[in-house]
Structure formats: structure tokens, C-alpha cells
Image (cartoon, rainbow, N blue to C red):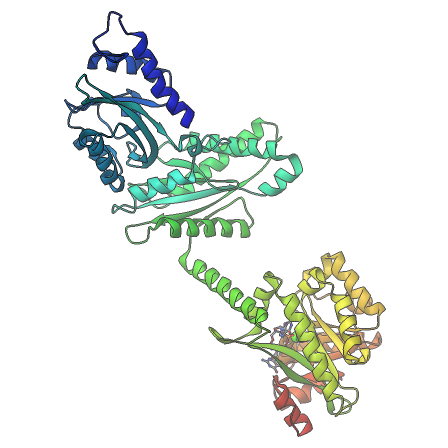
Length: 585
Ligand code: C2E
Ligand code: CA
Ligand code: CA
């Protein structure tokens, strides 16, 4: 930047020197030649054509300013030559920067300052501020009085304004434009973020050049489809944003998305399906109330995120309620993280008794996690376990649960020597952590008999589809660590689990147990599953027995174990010890 600048100013001098003595020559001083204003202006206009900069000359005595013709197009100027510089500058200079500029110009006119060198902002025709670097030198008259200020203005950010791949303006420009147009006026409109689905995979599979090509193609198609004054900008990653305001009807964003999508489909077809891909969009409408730029971008990103979650290749309009619940979930996740980092503060294990039906005695307990958050109070595990799974925080917490439950089990073995502890495992633990080694190590370290530990795994598609999970489960089996299939009968029930003896214990879900009394089908189903399991030497536990009547009717089906509120709700260790052993934890 600096070299160009020095070059320009020097170049002016060279031209002036060459003209010395020539036909155009005017006043002389030292070894320099002085041109009259018109000659000077003409010279500079020629120079202006040879550079991307704007060349200017300012006649300080007459207060007349002339700048390269292009500046009229690029800035908020109505003419390239004008009097009353101060007034015009007020219109083109970003208001915040004006006082500083005024001070510098006064120093030139009145205090003998000979150079001007400032970086400040001019406004473009839309009123968007543009950083410029302005340098100039004062030309003195024969009395040593400032006569002209001659120099050049260059746009500092010009090169960084346009995205190289898509040739679109970048996000900074959108932000400036938006803040200027929307935040200061009472208007409505929308922003729509369009992203390429699976862009990461496209890049990985076909290389970045191919990815760039797809992005450029999408930008091109979008540009061709925006015909009603919408503007388009490149955002981070694979995203482009369309911004529209003014007379915007509801539904406009979605229609535009659909148009763009079919144009993309057509272009894919024309290219013989060489670059097959889909696009998703998230849009947010703003009105005079809700329109802060940062917020809107967040909301638009969320809408796009939802579109991706809904299976991609689709349009989603921002929904305030969904967003609030998303933000709440993120916040809960953060609280969970802090609790875990803070030595598991707020977590506590509860224990629910599991009764041996034949012996009519307590057989063991299921460990159930509880969380008392400082911010949210007690929250059901049904709500927070999925959040722990999503963030993989279930892995460190799961280790803590296993350790705490096994230590408690060991204590209770002082009361009942073969007291068993059932511990729930999430599929994330099976999938992502070294669950098998962790379990073995923990059992060994605590010194508990492996026969007194049961890991419960909830039925889910993961068991069916994930080889990793199946391998881990097989590992448990090989090491004679007992496994229970939890909530049997819901979701992905598979009799293969029984047939192949993948589990040692079948826990039949509360839904069936409750229905047994009213629904004959459920009664028969539970009866058969129980008989089938027993024929394979597997144990059966019924979950959720709440009343004496329920107990009486399920007992006829001869389960091995029963768990439910009838025998006891989940309770903390102290309450459990008191109720079942008549003493403290
Ligand atoms: P789950 O493993 O099926 O646990 C049994 C749930 O049924 C417990 O709910 C328990 O309080 C409830 N329950 C037991 N008997 C009855 C009854 O008679 N009537 C009724 N209405 N409910 C009964 P909870 O403690 O709220 O746990 C919900 C789920 O959260 C658990 O279902 C389990 O999937 C998950 N969970 C709880 N603790 C853990 C844990 O430590 N690790 C993992 N991975 N998941 C856990
Ligand atoms: Ca369970
Ligand atoms: Ca269960």
C-alpha cells in the first residue's frame, strides 16, 4: 500500500517536473513548475486512469476539490468537482471520523502542516462505510502559502471485500450494509442462509477444488435467481446469505429457495450428474422490533441447523419456541459440564430395590442417576441423559456412576452377601468409550465379585446396526459380566436377543406390565416372552409394578424379579439402607 502511495505522489511530481518549461508551464518556484488549476486537474485525471486509486487535487484558496471521476460511482458524491468542501465532506465522510479529518485539514490550511496522511471511512452510495487511506502533499505558491493539496485515496479493504471463490461480497459488507439500512430504520425483511449439504464429505471425497467449484456454481445460480433487488453475500464455510428488505411478503424466502433448488437440480442434470449435491436453507424474517444483526445471524444459523437435522435438502423458517428450547438445552448441557468438572457436584445415585419373587426377598438394586442443578433444580434423567449423550459427557459421568454404585454394592454385601447392583449403560458409552476395559478395571480395583454386577443396556437401533456395540457386548459375555436388556418390548424388540442369548436378563417394560390386567394380548405376549426366556435359561424382571393388584396378577406369570414402586421408589443410599437393612448407609 505504502509503495503505491509514494509512487503516486512522486509520479505527480515527476509529471509536473517534465512539464517545466513546456507549453503548459505556469508559475515557477525553486526547481519546480507550477501548473494552473485546470492544467493540474487535467494531469491528475490522466493519472487517475492509470491506477485503482482515486487521485485528487484540492485548491485550498478557492476551496475547490476535484477527484477521479470513478469516485462518484463508488462513494456518496454527486460530482467529481465541487466547492464548499467542508459541506460535501460531511456527506461523504463517516460521521464519527469527520472531526478528526477536520482537525487535520485545519492544520494544513492554518498551521503550516505540509502533508496529509490519514486512514478513515468514506460512505459508499448505500451509506456503507468503506475504510480508505488518504495521503497528500501540499503545494505552496510563490509566497510559501498553501496552494493545493494533491494526493490519492485508496480503499484499504477493497481486496478483502470480495470472496475469491464466489465473487460475492463477504459477510463484513453484509453486516455494515444491514446495520446501516435496517438497524437505523423502521423496515422489515428477511435473511436466508443457504448451505450445501454434506459439503465436508464432498471436499473429502472429491478434493477442495471440486468443493470450490460447487460453491461457485451455487453462488452463480443464486445470483441469477435474485431478480428483485435481493443482495447476496458469502458467509463462512459452504454458506451464502440472501438479504432482502422493504416490500417483503411472507413466503418470499421459501419461494426463492425453491427456485434456486430447482435451478441447481437442472444444472446438475445438464452436467450429467457429475456434481450431484443438495442445498438446505434457514430463513428468518425481521421487523421493526427484532432486528439486531448478531441475533438475526444466530437465528438464521439455527434455522439452517434445523433444516439439516430434518434430513437436509429442505427449507426451515426460524421458530422462536424451537430456538428457545435449543438454547435451554445448550445451557443445561453447560451446567452439566460444570457439575461434572466440579467433582460431580449436584449428582447423586439413587437406588431402587429389585425383589426376588421366589424367595420374596431383596435381590439387589438398580442405580439411577439424579441431578440437582443449581440453576434448574431437580431434573428428570429422561431430560438430561440425552444431553449427556449428545455431548459425550455421559462417558466421564458413567465412570463415576459405575464406581459409586459398585462401592455401594460392596457395602451392602455386608448385609446380603450376594447383593447385586444393576448399572445402566448408554449406547454412547458402548460406542465411544473403552467401556469393557473400564468395567473390568473398576470391578477389579474395587474387588467386587463379577457375578454381583449387571449392566443394563436399553434396546435401540444401535445394538442392531453397530458392529462396535455388538463387539463390546460380546466382550462382556466372554468375561462373564452379566448383561440385561432394558425396556424390552419398546422400540427395537428383537427375539434374536433371546434366541442368541446375547443377554442374561430380560427386563420387560412397565408399559406391558401395566397393561397386563386390561389387555389380553399384552398378557399373552408377556407370558410367552417369559416362557421363551426361561426355556433359554435367561432371567426375567418385570418393571414398574405399582400396586398390590398388579403384583398379584404378574406373579402368576412367574418372573424371576420384580422392580417397581410397590416395593420401593428409587431412593438415596441412606434411605435405602434404612428401609431394607434398618440402618444408615
Ligand atoms: P430405566 O433404566 O428404565 O429406569 C427405570 C425407570 O423407571 C426409573 O426412572 C424409575 O424411577 C422408573 N420406575 C421404576 N419403577 C416404577 C414404577 O413402578 N412406576 C413408574 N411410573 N416408574 C417406575 P428414572 O429414574 O426417572 O430414570 C429414567 C431413565 O433414565 C432410566 O430408565 C434410564 O434409561 C435413564 N437413566 C437413569 N439413570 C441412569 C444412569 O445412571 N445411566 C444411564 N445411562 N441412564 C440412566
Ligand atoms: Ca434400567
Ligand atoms: Ca427400564
